[in-house]
Each structure stands twice: as C-alpha cells, then as structure tokens.
Length: 162
Image (cartoon, rainbow, N blue to C red; front, top):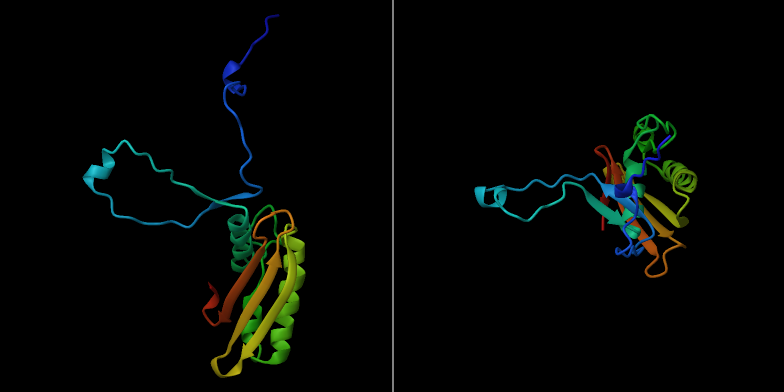
C-alpha cells in the first residue's frame, strides 16, 4: 500500500499566521455601485464578501437577533426576537417593560459573548413607538469593549440608529 501525501494542504513554513482579531463575522449587506468598462479590465480585485471583526461582528450578531424571527434559521429555530408581537398591544409603560424583559432574556441566551448592562425601553404613546437603548460589554476584547445600541420599534419594525 502506498502513502498519499497532500502537500498543498499543509501550512507553508515561510508564512507567519498572526491572530489580529478575536471574533469575525460575514457582513451580508450588499453595496451596489456603478461599474464602468475601465473597472472591468482593472487588475484590482475586490472581494464580494465583506467581514466584520470583533465589536463589528458582535454588533452584526445583535442586529441579526433583532431582525430575525424564531423559526427563520433552520438549524436554530429559537434564534431571533419577535418584537412585532408587541406592536398589536396598546402602547404603554407595561408593554415597554415586557419588551425590555424579552430583550434582556433573549440577548443573554442568544449572544453569550456579551454582558447586557442596561436595557431601557421608553414608550412614546403619542407616536405609538418605543425607543430602545442598550449598553453591552464585551469582556474578551481588551480595547474599547462596550457597545451602545439605539433602536426605534414602531409599525415599520425595528430600526437602528446612532
């Protein structure tokens, strides 16, 4: 019996691999641009997929939790929040409290990389909407390890802003 050796799968000795980030995530936001003929013949190659690293990857994950509904992910049917269920309830402080409790419990379950410090949900009764602010800490990233989220929940769904 002969041995088969696959040398192209081994790590080259002359390449130094340096870990530059803790977390990485693929960004699926598509950016459209105008393509002209000069760009098509260019030697510069742009990658189709963009990546988010560290805090950007965690922000992307939090946005995915808020914008996904349970059942959207086939292999993880509990992933996501269904904040739209609260839009059919009367806009009140009680509903705001329920939204805050839902966010707090689900972020703890679905994003173990963060510590949720505060969640504030304020009902704007005149406009039938809720202002959501969150402060998250990421203990495994040494530099700037906090994330502030601001969102607006209204009849159009959840919208994030800074």
